[in-house]
Image 1 (spheres, rainbow, N blue to C red):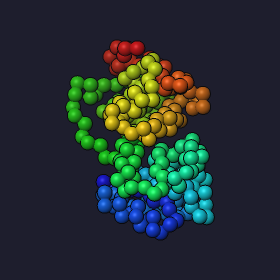
Image 2 (tube, one colour):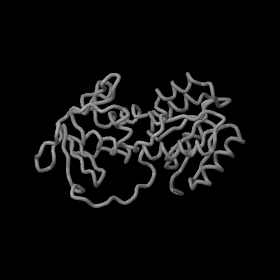
Image 3 (cartoon, rainbow, N blue to C red):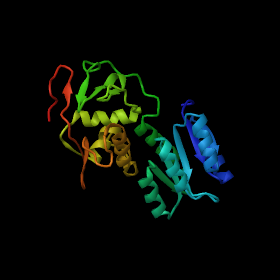
Length: 248
């Protein structure tokens, strides 16, 4: 995991030291930032896999920094908040943060959150895939062509769509169950297994990021539609390369 780089945004030197210590002891590379300018500098010069962001910075708003990050990057963000900052927490999730952890926190809980978010985003190095009969299959939908074993998606214009491994895992969930309503819980179970934590419920953010990459109008999606109060439905017909339509 030494090639997994975490940016710690925190202006309290003691908390920064604690975060660096526990993250480095778990094998992560760690950078530090205390201001929005330092965050911009880090993102422009280093591949950052995850950011822990204190919302209660003394001189700047952590929410403003989160919003600025989201304008230029999909890097996963874990907010670090005061225990009672419910409103900031909700606003942070709406802006696009992936999870939060309240202060004071336990080291094991922090690492569990980091592991979970990295797993969902696909940033943690994947294990070699096992060969199977479907490894080289190609799936088509709405003019797109997906090749799962290559994590490759080609758009209707013939250009490669830039998806992270996490984006592709979520897309694959929909490709395997086209025209079926999937609850958020079902999607999370498929992505992370039945042992996921209730705090992992950031599937809406993942769907929003995928929509930005495959929808003509992400704000008025046609491919991944929201089923209010339940979850999502993937509306296109999905076909195999040979032309066999996947069960609807």
